[in-house]
Image (cartoon, rainbow, N blue to C red; front, side, top):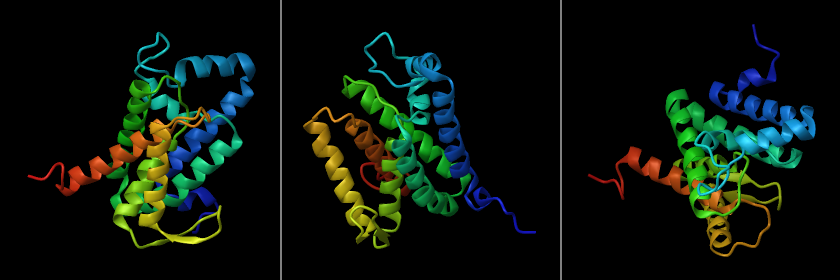
Amino acid sequence: MQSNNPLSSIPPVTRNILIAIVVMFLAQQILGQTGGQFIGRYFALYPIDTPYFYPWQLLTYALLHGDLMHLFFNGFAIWMFGSQIESYWGEKKYSIYIIACIIGSGLANAVLSDVGAIGISGAVYGLLVAYGMMWPNHTIQLILPPIPMKAKYFVMIFAGIALISSINPNNDGIAHIAHLGGAITGFLLIQFWRKKPPFKW
């Protein structure tokens, strides 16, 4: 019997990630200012040289989002790219990759940035890199602007923006260093699995 649950068509790890970030966002809203402050104090990511940093923040920051649009675009990207990657790799390899990108993104921001971070955007950048490396000539239909683009060019543009913005921060409230950290972590992990430079032996 075919399930009427639309979530059943999403691979399990991707589905659980989407559920987790939605539940945490709702918790932020329901708990109000006091509860939100508690979550932000202990679960958001802070620079590693501040008294507010705790090791678990390298994972928990990814579950938090600043507003509904932040949540929507990250969730949409995870569904769009993560579903295909998980179906190709399988649950175990995909889980390792996602966790590595979250931690790598968090470490980059905690060590190299003097501001905190929330959101799973760093892992999204890791997924973009994985998608671009595995299916470079697949066409992606962009939303803004509404034009088609090959995956390899799409990834290059977004990685370039993250790199330039990390070098020249403009206090726009976006964790560009975290984005770049997630992209680099994803690239290095795939190269390691492929036994290619800088891991060729």
